[in-house]
Length: 178
Image (cartoon, rainbow, N blue to C red; front, side, top):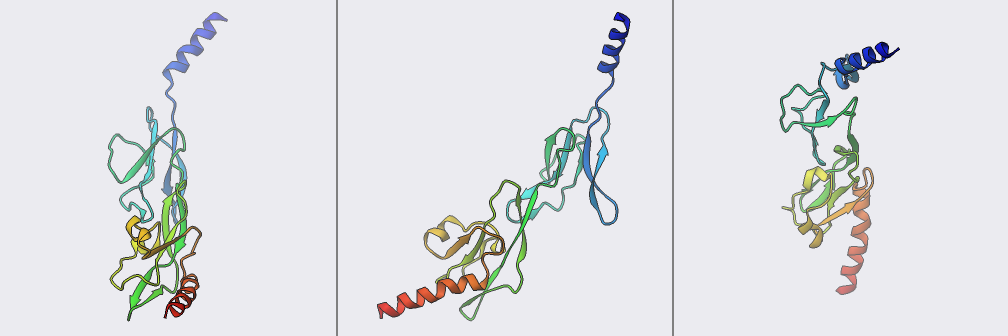
């Protein structure tokens, strides 16, 4: 019995744990659990560029010892789950001194624990105002403070229809001042 316990202890110390990491596989590509080499304890996934997108140079897989800024590293089996929360916001452009929302909302990317935020120019924003991240994410603090940018916190909340909600009261205020 003692010999069996000693044998079990030796075997458990010499057998390396093999972790699994998600990798893209198949056509179309989907995240698939894959065994890593012995002694690998970390996985990687593409780094998120907050509100802008996923780093195109990044990939999913087992850490092979090389490190770079295109990936995020995590510890343990299947820790490299898809961490991107995808939502949509409208981009805006100024044509003939009129701000117009794009016909369709574009895709926005953020870490899973990042709040959904969209931005848009206020009706009083100058024609040369630059909309941050094509409408994805928060306003630049200065633009929020000076009233040239408006924020909202729901999927596709910065549409042209929501912009018109601000124009009618603005016209009423301006008319009452005249």
